[in-house]
Amino acid sequence: MSYIFKYVMRKEATERKLIDGLNCSPVSACDEFEYVKHQYHKEDGRQYYHIVQSFSPDDNVTPELAHEIGMKFAENFPGYQVLVATHTNTKHVHNHLIMNSVNFENGRKFHISRDQMLQYKEISNQLCRQYGLSVTEVKTKKALAGRTS
Image (cartoon, rainbow, N blue to C red; front, side):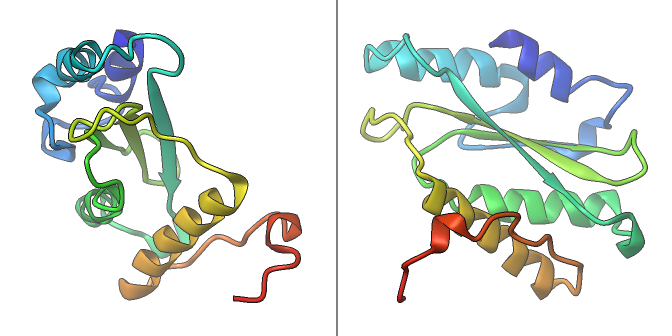
């Protein structure tokens, strides 16, 4: 698990001011994730979730704005520790969110269905709309077929 933290926080990709933790500290996030897993005896299976939140290069979004949006998006995972690192080393600014698979409040492991994943994507799109940014299209309508709500 330490590899993913080193990868998303590397100096070539981001700056210290663009790395934050929700319910954890960036400097000790890996240890904090492991502590929660140990506390609830959930050291096996999936260790974390890695979410990439990309922004259109056409929007010319600032790294600071992208990071703010990433932190707001992380708030949609209550009870989970989330590290947010905003990368500026590509043609488009993007966030890496690393989320502990174990909830620190109740010890439950995070599970997500395809429909729930699409709901989270829509939450990210809503945040982008609030800031006047482009949104990504859902690539498959299959998961939403048959829904009436």
